[in-house]
Length: 135
Image 1: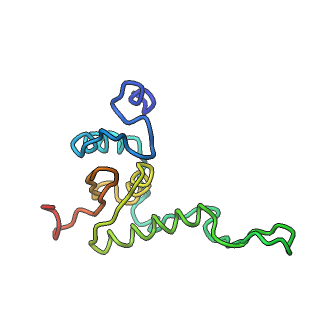
Image 2: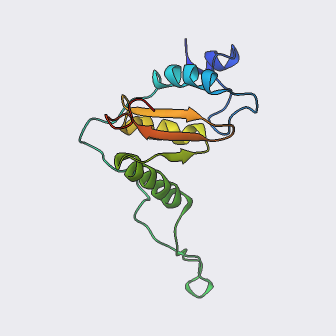
């Protein structure tokens, strides 16, 4: 069954964004397990940071340069957000996500050890480690 079919049958949320107002952590844990089946993790050691084609470009819109854009793009801001979360959870901390697609991006880096807990509108995320395995 495809992800779209699962969404139609309401096995999965019909979104990759904000959660349903009725979502519980128990429902989320089941959905998280299913969603992981559709995610291809990055090869171990190949990618340690979230990046992409536009990550290094810093441009800002400036009238005097006939429209050259200077400053961070939305992609750069999002990449920075995901990389900050990766840094925090790799340091043994708990961090927070607000959209399902953010968790999907984190799973690509930590397919087997990323843990989540749905908390009424946001998710706590951390890595399964010996220190907090019983969380």
